[in-house]
Length: 226
Image (cartoon, rainbow, N blue to C red; front, top):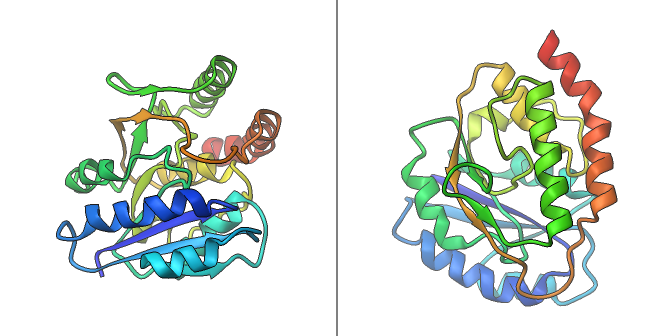
């Protein structure tokens, strides 16, 4: 199996009903063997039935948090490459073609909002805070990455399989990149346009987002300096 798609989800049935068929249509013919894993964090909507009817694999998350869902999906994935993305349709599934075509350039590819050619359609305050946090993290940790908080990524499985990651919230994204970069893996960014979700409300709150960054900074700084 070449590709595993891992999608953390919470009450995203309306989006998944559109996303999964679009995703499968994009992947079919692009790779030799794939799986679409929806890691559900306890949805109260029709997520389970939507996933099964749409051709995905439904996995009930035992733990809690975005990071835990991501780690769960990575742990059970079987593909040589692992693609992670959001369930809310803010990550255009057709962009997978660009990531797949660039898979030999680096062990980790990031769909980046903050490199030349990338952009993000989001509220101004969120955009400002996101940029500040990404720039501050990159400088403080000596990481030449502009979009550390993008969850739209393509990993070579050997990089993240077995990685000892402690983050269980959104800070998992920065931790994976920090550990991978420190271990000598190559990380590249590809320009990407981020768009607002199609249905529902975001589960990522600005305060929670910022706190998760600050919580992980000390650990990541010690890793980089070591």
